[in-house]
Amino acid sequence: MQLIAITGSIGCGKTTLAKIVKGLGYTVFDIDGWVRRIYFQKDFIKVIAESFPGTVSNGQVNKRMIRDIVFSDHEKLAYLEGLIHPFLKETLKQVIRRNAGCRDLFFIDIALLFEMGWDKYCDFIIVADVDYEIQKQRVMKRDKVSADDFDKINNVQMDNKKKIELADIVINTNKPKNLLRSELIKIIERLEAADGQRNCF
Image (cartoon, rainbow, N blue to C red; front, side):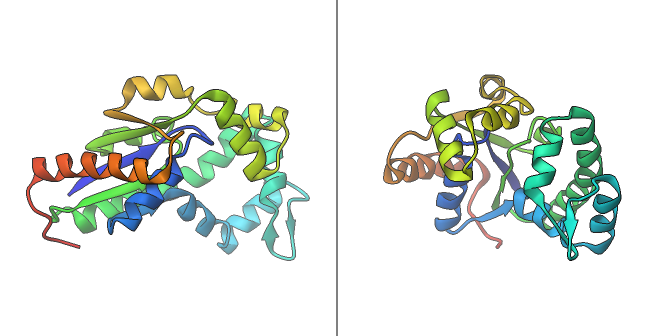
């Protein structure tokens, strides 16, 4: 098994790269999807209701309210991460154990790879990058947030320049998807050549 990380700061295009890789037929684990699963667990919802009053209504967590709270208070952000990260780490370990005997490539789509220390589990790291202003406009348009809100979200993540220094390869995502696809195919071909033929799903 080779575990390949696709990472990058918010709005840098990591999810676009992950979708292209998935479209090529590879397994891509969406870490944000794992997080979404947690928000449906009754025990977790109960803790959130107690720790963040007013953010739970009719058994559902208002994630936008949670985001506004934690991105303005680093202590509360650290507390929330302390609830979520152990679950994510255990899920990742299960994935690694389950596929340890495979010679396939597996990908994870993860924003906080370095912040969570998960780079140690990965064989290869792809960092998505883009000009700061493009990144900012992408997030503001996609998430319908202000420039100030973007700065709050972006500032709690590791600077993408530092991520680039730790990457095995960097992909600038400010280009058409067909060019990104071609770039990824070349990278994957090199990875497969280094690890032999794919023989396990």
